[in-house]
Amino acid sequence: MLRKGCAHCSLQQLCLPAGIGVEGLKQLDSIVRRRRPIARGESLFRMGDPLEAVYVARDGAFKTVSISEDGEERVVGFHLPGELIGLDALGADLHRCDAVALTTANVCEVPFDQLADIASQVPGLQHQLLRVIGRSVGRDQDHLDMLARRQASERIALFLHGLSERFRHIGQSALEFRLPMSREDIARFLGLALETVSRGFTRLQDDGVIAVEGRRVEIRDRAALERLAHHPEPIEPRNRLHG
Amino acid sequence: MLRKGCAHCSLQQLCLPAGIGVEGLKQLDSIVRRRRPIARGESLFRMGDPLEAVYVARDGAFKTVSISEDGEERVVGFHLPGELIGLDALGADLHRCDAVALTTANVCEVPFDQLADIASQVPGLQHQLLRVIGRSVGRDQDHLDMLARRQASERIALFLHGLSERFRHIGQSALEFRLPMSREDIARFLGLALETVSRGFTRLQDDGVIAVEGRRVEIRDRAALERLAHHPEPIEPRNRLHG
DNA sequence: CGTAAATTTGACATCTATCAAGAGCGGTGG
DNA sequence: CCACCGCTCTTGATAGATGTCAAATTTACG
Image (tube, rainbow over all chains, first blue to last red; front, side, top):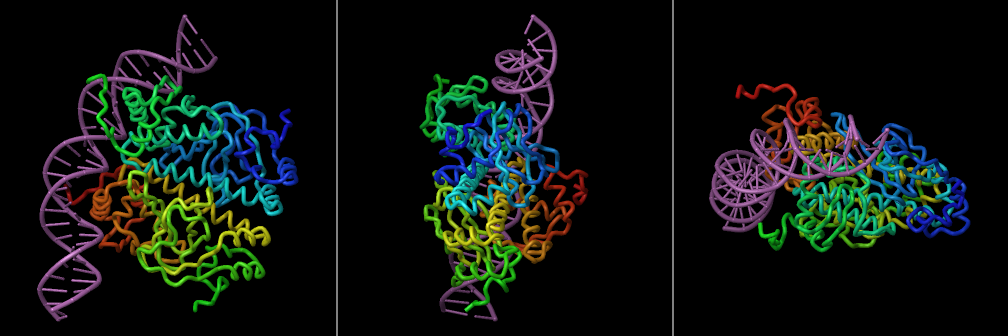
């Protein structure tokens, strides 16, 4: 039944509850619904749906995608456990994109109206809500930063680096992890062709920066990865098996 | 002295005040500061500054830029009158970018702590604040949508189209306007080289979609602009002076 | 174990960045 | 009022990177 509640959730520090008192926590807890597991490929909401709730995955991962008018799917964002999903509807009360599960996932659902209500009563919660929104805005800006890079290699390095940081942030290994998304998803997230992403991974592996095996990634040389994220090409022409 | 206050501001409908009662308006009005005109090139805040206030231009325009670690300037966003500036700091209470005036501008400054205070008291204001934040998030997603396009022509068409919509939204002509930003700013916003932007404008002019004269832009064929925004190249191979 | 999907790899055309130079524009000072 | 200067913008040539098409290979899943 998963009736433990926010107070004992491993995501406590990342979620809305951070920094609010016991009273507030109880109130918040009372409106949070825990949904049955979402299967891979299922949607939490679709483009055009009215804003009813925001969601946080306790485990699993999601992508948010928008189908542009020319029928192309663009990946707007990836969402790891503890990262709020559904804020895209804040502007117009209508969702601008679909939220699709990349893996089987468990989510908490927080009805938005009730959240807003409580937020105006519980002193810390409003601030915390704004902060969580702000973190989400921050991730959007990181995304912008990636897409503004002209070199595919930079975008890819930045993507892996950012993902690594986020895994660390939720208490998983930052140096070895499994990508929840396909190469195609990554390509659509980075504004690149699928093949370019694949080649980018291969190149990083050849250069000894990472090890890839399908969706398993190991970061071998974090410093090099960061360098690549900020410079088009290897600073020092590293000797690649002499040719 | 500009002592007219929010109640009479032409931006009323776009700003925080929309939809809050007379009482709330008075409270809000009491904390809004109107600053002396900002000169072109001046900054409202800099990267790393603590979040003190959010800003709305009453006239003029701003850009927000972030200097990435490799020293490149990236344009994160453009801000027309009525569009909130400063939300980038929500996540960490620290500004992530500089806000620079593109023209001489008059701005309203709203101390953030006081705004948050009042928002929790005035029923409509919290909702309105979230909505304004949401619109800002929406603009970020439009930006992402542009940058995810692989063809420069699509990004440029989308940029002009979006700008046109925003001018209309603030009551100015959507078909004829003056760009407040340089080609270089646009290039850094779109992740393109300056020359590519220039060439893109020229091409649109040659195709009869727009007329450009320096920073003056006239949209001649809105439908064509929208088509270009969603398709790499002219659907119907329009006859360009027969060859 | 077999089939479909995902990923990698190769070849090639195209687009964009880059380097370079020139034109247009606005502002300044004589 | 005109000439000059600097900055922005445009235009051209070229090299390099990425998208596209195609096919082989691996992986995942039933």
